[in-house]
Amino acid sequence: MKIVIVGVGHVGLTTAAVLAELGHDVVGLDDDRTKLELLRAGGAPFHEPGLAELVERVTADGSLTFTDDLAAALAGAAVAFVCVGTPSLPGGGPDLRFVERVGADVAREATDEIVLVEKSTVPANTGERLTQVIAREQEARRGGGPTVHVASNPEFLREGVAVQDTREPDRIVYGTSSDTARDVLREVYAPMIERLGCPVVETDVPTAELIKHASNAFLATRLSFINAVANVCDRVGADVDVVAEGMGLDARIGPAFLKAGIGYGGSCFPKDVDAFLHLSRSVGYDFALLEEVRRINIAQRQVVIDKLVEELWHLTDKTITLLGAAFKPGTDDLREAPALYLAQDLLDAGAHVRVYDPVALDQVKERLPDVEVVDDPLEACRGAHAAVVATEWPEIVGMDLGALRDVLDYPIVIDGRNALDADAAQAAGLHYHGVGRGTRRS
Ligand SMILES: NC(=O)c1ccc[n+]([C@@H]2O[C@H](COP(=O)([O-])OP(=O)(O)OC[C@H]3O[C@@H](n4cnc5c(N)ncnc54)[C@H](O)[C@@H]3O)[C@@H](O)[C@H]2O)c1
Image: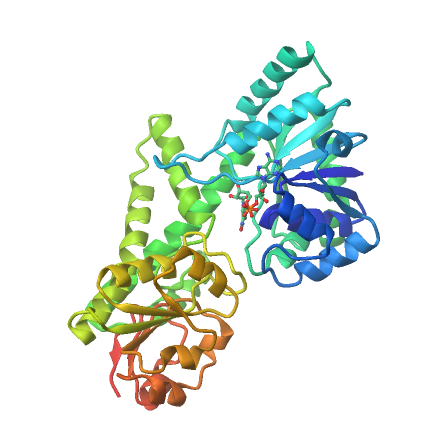
């Protein structure tokens, strides 16, 4: 089947490569010319384990190609996936202009019946809006056009393990409003479903759209819940990691997304929580629970600052090293990374901030010119008054704690991800603070 992917970013490029690997004929399109040129030259536009190798393989055998010519890409295609960004607007709602533009462009350029699938995360009822945009555009520019069936097929991949998640999803969800769209999506995923036997949810368009927002909002809720529990643990002398373990062994609860820390970040959770709140408000429902999830997440960064102040009194002229910048390991994505907010808060408090990250330092320097970037974790800590673990990269978790003690000016470590072995840190001579794990003084 010929498939068009509009927007070859984190989701689009991974989807394109995996669908090509499944045996489809895939054309990737992007309005960022630099990105397209880089991809055509065999380069990788971002860090995602295993993706560059997969893209190289499927472009070499011709099953994935790239173009900036939408009309040519759409010729003979059965389906086009919309994988463009849906960032937050200042009021919290998602900026849907990129999705709208793809709808209008496809309405203008498609010559044959096609299924247009929202893979971007969008609020419920975007499909209906997109259908209106297409009808209006076709009427205005061409006096009509081929049928464009709008469908929703939300994406659940996680950056850092995106290739694996796309190859072996927990479930496939699609919402359609015509038999044609449903049959086309069945055919797209047939080789994957036959191989994996993964569950498929076939539903209508608004329900599929809502499944995505509800899923991310629920995961964010679990994280804010365990962070709130961690804050109580710190006050009563309990260990949140053991609390989470004990909770997670209950089959009704399960262990995932019960890791306390400095809060969630990334390109999805913060914006999707905001968008779901915005949608709820716009339809007259006060989703106060989600408002609180959001508030707890933002407040969680302050926990690190409070622990630093507890140790160092004030932060003016203190040197603080942030170990890790990416919002999670395995990616160089800095969108909404808690470490960047923390760095800015520390700069505002008058501290000198150093940052180490194994892959994201160039982007850190671009985003925060006032921080010092250092490409070795121990060197980054040399002479610092405290180190803060902000991303649980293996390079950071596996650090020699004795060597860390030796290079730090004061032996203070704030483990914002509860990633270090607290006993080992204490034994190495460090004053160790986790989140909801209390303090261990050497
Ligand atoms: N990143 C994730 O982990 C993830 C996971 C699930 C869902 N999503 C959702 O998928 C969507 C895309 O996210 P992403 O992280 O891949 O974003 P991204 O910014 O990495 O990629 C978006 C791409 O779309 C391109 N683009 C924008 N407008 C275009 C247009 N009119 N024509 C062609 N190309 C265009 C951009 O140049 C960019 O390359 C978002 O809605 C996001 O919420 C993301």
